[in-house]
Length: 113
Ligand SMILES: [Zn+2]
Image (cartoon, rainbow, N blue to C red; front, side, top):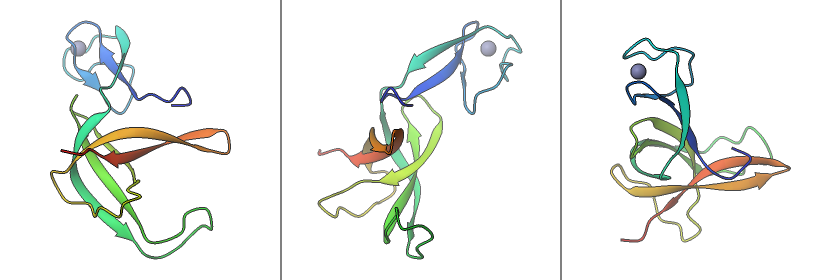
């Protein structure tokens, strides 16, 4: 993730995306693997608004999304919407990365229609 792109492990035999990462394909039970770069696009499957602050680096309120990526896996990350767009289920988003002290963290940004 520190390269600023989202990648998924993919079975080189049958093409099944393995998420989370694992040594064995759950579909064909082969070990062969390759890495593919995600399109970065997905739709909001679920979300919650965090209102209780647990760390000064994450001021509240903020929104955590569960996004179903176009490739299938569901990825959890914060919504970054400077214009204040509220989350809604089915909303189109794309992944981006923010530098948090040398560690790139994924965030989702809204897609304009
Ligand atoms: Zn497979």
